[in-house]
Length: 475
Image 1 (cartoon, rainbow, N blue to C red):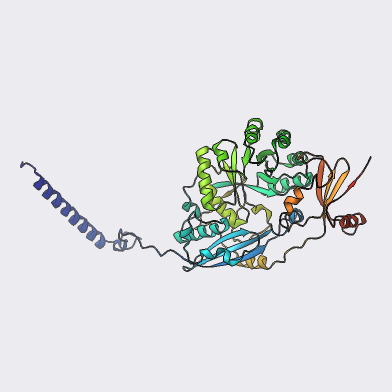
Image 2 (cartoon, helix red, strand yellow):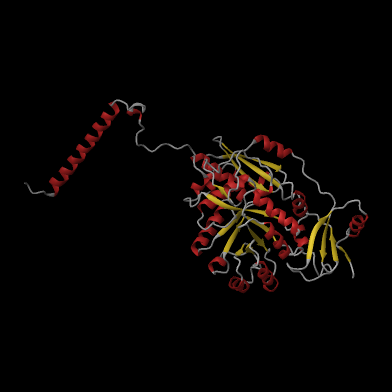
């Protein structure tokens, strides 16, 4: 055998490469001339292994805004309207059009904005805004468009899926104990396992919980939002009382976020999980909470916060008010965020109908992640037109009536459509009016009083013309 020097080795290598290429070409020719396999068509039609040409990225040409009014469920429609006014039930459906003919669907909570608010998106590609938008409602439409362009469900643009079903919670406003019990019965019948509501100092949260506990099926839980306005001394005794009830589930924002020592103590002493919403992400890093709530976050912000939660091992929930369009996208997000294990709040439970063809029924407390391209829902144009033209409700006259066990009764007119009206309602306590110091456990119940035409109502209506009024029954 001749010794193999560098020149001979290179020559053999080139020869072998040439033979391999000749053999590959002959094989390709044989394949092209071969008889087709049964039912497969001629093999010469098999596409060559050249990367396919993609269509150019779509550009946004127009954004339509459709303000819709969809009725609430009958059992609590009047209470919801009186508490939060017309601004809450209104939603604006976004239809984002492109030069490729694709449409993306999103939705905003509330009245339709001025069109120029979203003018910066026109002329751009949805792909220009990956994790870079600043409004969750528009983000939904952008990810819907991107998914449709690629033929992929939206979750594939966010990360690997870790769950097929996403836990969700219903939502309501604070009401007297018997009405809170009815809320529990109603949402439980529709498949929910959790109910969230804002605790109100004009109600006794222990009395509310006692009524809900009796009405709740086994395993049903309540998330209490304490609004982040109180202090440790006022809240801790109430939490101790709530711990006694099986229905008590989680506590959100029990005290002001500035009181980090208070959060540290609550986590040590309270058996109920403590969630932070109106506070920074470093509450998770410093182990000051058991979990986190991300409210109305654009996609980019949610991704960053999700990464922090995963690094800290803290579960979290998303809260985004909207209907089925919003809930569909929330499910795509929660499908890929590993620590998104808490029951997410969307508000979809509030309305008796929607403008989408698809529905997302709650089964065992969860909704299934949709798999069609984009967010997975389509618009029912007939419903969109009907609810866009639907007459908006008007308020009849009523008074907020707050009755203490001592015999003191406070009366107040409440225009929920005025800015800050809900906060003013929660502040109906001393020093602005007589009565005990604010407490979530005062012996008190509040309701909306609407006996128009009756002498006592008409008298108090007149007396509240310039502000709160009160009466006191003495023994």
